[in-house]
Length: 193
Image 1 (cartoon, rainbow, N blue to C red):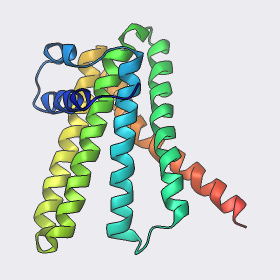
Image 2 (image 1 turned 90 degrees about the vertical axis):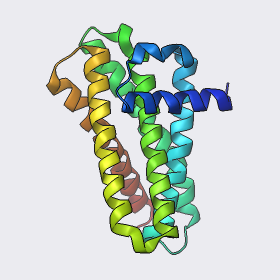
Image 3 (image 1 turned 90 degrees about the horizontal axis):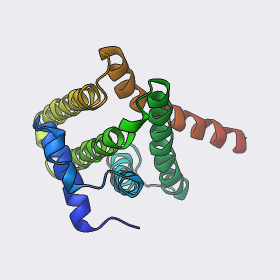
């Protein structure tokens, strides 16, 4: 049920190969392109994203993490990825490309994992080397834009669709995260008043 270390490394290597503009077809045999592969990608992406979010909050925003922040980060992160996966599923159904769902979403989620892993490494480097903040931040921005471009190209290549749809998918990923976070804050404010 849970991914092995080999499957995790193969997924992250797939993300790196996509980042290096290697053809997706050459690397699909290393990961599972079926429902269990989607679960593996969501699970690993969630764990890396939770660790990255909590590290950012601890390093940049909060002096001490409250239990509410720690506990709410876990379901919020899983919810973001599930909502995004459903969003892509319904979008591909509307486009009559639902046969491409697993070939698209699984590598896309591994790219998100890689993006969150690079974010985590950036935050750790900033904590260790505060004097190099500008250099490390510039490198992080460059890598982030490179990953967004790679996500766009992956959507374009694996779905064979228009530029507008590809932009919509990449921005949709960001908007889903913001939307789920906004709902969490709204519910928290309602129950705390």
